Image (cartoon, rainbow, N blue to C red; front, side, top):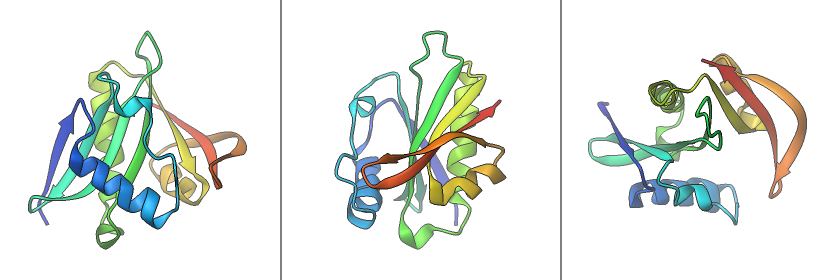
Length: 143
């Protein structure tokens, strides 16, 4: 497997396809797409294996000083899970955030993925909250 990383300032059709497949079809979310998908300041990443889109994620900031960025909408096509692509997504987006001047990353993590993020150095804080019917927890990491 040879993974190619493609960053973009807009949500590509391949990114939309992966997110629709994972979040809408598999997990049952209704409101998958939001204003950050149209924000030209957001950075989207799609991973390709032999020109097939297999994973995606997004990076954006609401911080006018650009010190805190948010990573989200991480999704890996079912057949490519457990191959380390989630880690590649997170680390690639962290590096991009550093290039943009970030000092901290936040994530609104699905509770079932909390352990994954902890292994990558993130810490949880606050109470569990729900996005649609899925429990989430705030997590962050100092870069």
